[in-house]
Length: 349
Image (tube, rainbow, N blue to C red; front, side, top):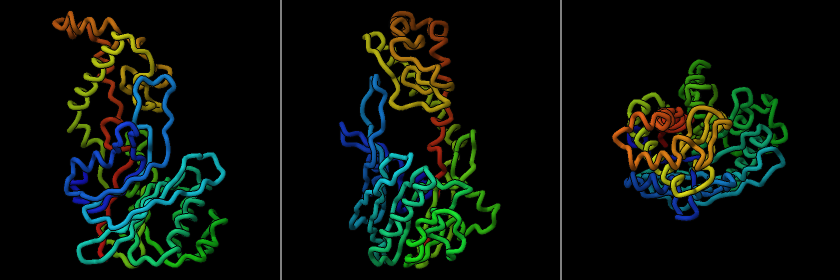
């Protein structure tokens, strides 16, 4: 998607970090995209692991930025925790990016809370940060987790009138002291209500489908938005990578059969499979948590299955019927590059 859209600067949320190797998903992506020489990432949280998990690593999560243009300086600000149900730590990345001939872009990457009141507080901290210094060209790239019926956190940035507010009222002082008015790139180009709905980015899954617009590109008045597009529809990638995904799942099943053969016990997936998925043999399959199985108790990757792989490969189809079923039960999340569509904008300074 990045190559196809010819993007210059990309903001990432929910970036995974592996403390054992020092790797993260943005640096891994950079190796595949050598033209993007500059990056900055910041870990925000540790992801809870299953107590009996047999795999370790990739336990950190945060945000990042990848750029074709030089990142002159970059820093992060930890958002102070405000009392509420969302205990995840939030951070803001600020990168000064030098473009070819237009000077410095001040790019901010954010990932707001999923709790409405805490979103207001996140927006308040962002506004205070933007007020600290004089920035000429400002771009904010973020998953704001905004709900269709609660746009007030975004309106703290983009609204022109104080009287509009029916939410985030405790943060109106920051709105009053705001030095600049900001603009939502999508609505700058797509003004009608029908076009706004066409800008929905979540959920990029057959179910529940697209129903909200949490992902935004916000700019200040010095920046002109030429166009805004969405990409990443999973149905396209499903057709392209179906065989590759099944091959990877086959390898996972054989590997976990071997672990069962060696007597390894525990939860075999590297992640939680969510409310609509079950973990079996290191793979997420359609179902729910009641269908989870730990090694060596999964019938389709048991001690006996590995012995059959060694001894009876010529009877493959008959012996491994259950194994084939597990391999074939690919969840939509594996076909889709993300549960969010990717939002991109063409701008001029």
